[in-house]
Picture (cartoon, rainbow, N blue to C red):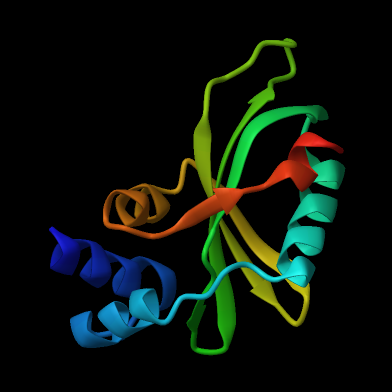
Length: 128
């Protein structure tokens, strides 16, 4: 299962990453930096329908793939109807201190979460 996940990460996120490279990427992932947390918080604040409703937020360790930082998020937020949608997962790509990609319901992040990718509390999102 782990090899399948790593192969999918390689194909879906950056193409041309071998299973061995994927294992190294996960093994060398590091806790998210304060900069990662701030950049993602700003992005969510400016793009979510109701960013002030976020609860149950977590952020994953950061993976570096071809110079790009990849992180995964878990969070629960209200939609445009004012209803909580349930805890969802998202993938975030950060380059040069900016979010350059954000994918809700990111399947590779879901697989990573099930394969041992470490998550940390993300209270900054809950305090927007």
